[in-house]
Image (cartoon, rainbow, N blue to C red; front, top):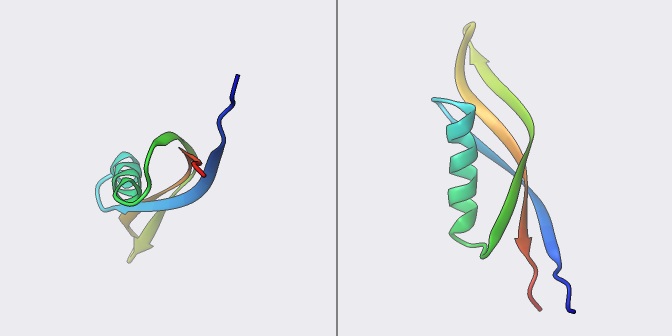
Length: 69
């Protein structure tokens, strides 16, 4: 039985609406050049603040995709 190997990379997505939208942005952008994305794990959530107001949301993700020789 052959096993599979996966590579894990870190992505950061941004959005001016929500952390969920930031995650979707990161995944859809990565999906344009990486094939066979499998799992995304949120590792950190943060926001940027300007003049005392939240201006954008950032989601950091570890994303795995199948490694093919």
